[in-house]
Amino acid sequence: MAGTPQQPYGPPQQPMPQFSPHVGRQPGGTAPKVWGVLLLVLGFLGLVFMAMNVASMFGGGLKASMFGFNLSPEAKVEIDKLVADVAAASMNQWSTWANLAAELVIAILSLIAGFLLVVKPRPVGRKLALARALLVLLALPLYGLASVDKADMSNELTERTQRIMVDDMARQEEARSPSKNDEEREKRRTDMLRQVQMMQPVTEAAQYAGVAVVGLGILIINGLLLFFMTRPAVKEYLESVASGGDHAIPGYDPSMGIASGPPPGSAQPPHGS
Image 1 (cartoon, rainbow, N blue to C red):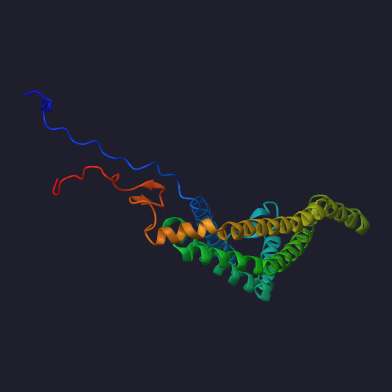
Image 2 (image 1 turned 45 degrees about the vertical axis):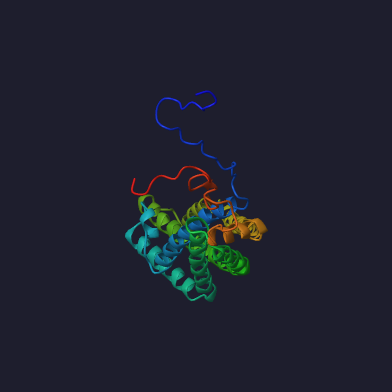
């Protein structure tokens, strides 16, 4: 019949779905992910290094005498006793234990904040990250004091160990080739000690420079952490994720930056299919 719309052959055509407009990544979502991963790594490494330090203080790990291949058994025993005495002296310093306690709290805060920033984003993760950064900055002088004390004791240990090694090597050399008199014997020992200690000033300077460089790196990293965690976009992003994105576009998951459900207006699949 004229004027009657013709139906095409085949099944009835479904209406074209109405796709939602393109949704970009929500501002403020990158910083929590990057810093969350970094905090998880720093927290894990902090616990590992702290466990290694505690183990070394209580006599665990390798012994210094194991590296003296040409030393006599008596010299090795003397070096091990010297190392034990230095470790005991380190345990008696309040700065050592205060620094370890601060490192433990910082490591735990890092792990919790990292988890609540990248694994399960929550606004409290940002607050914990800020607390972590502030605690690190407050404990930075304590870290410097403990590190300088440790460097001093390490330098003293190195110097005393070198003297033990030189005395032992001089005795072995004297046994192989006896000196003509005491003056020649002392000159031989002095020459050996001078050769062994030639690089000691450079080593000591490198240790103190390393403390300064690490302290500067700690200051920069935690300053950046404070800067990014105080950005309004980061706060809004985490609050949006925690609230489920009620004020966002329907079907939009702000934690992923993509549409998680079917586009508005599209045909819904029948139940049970």
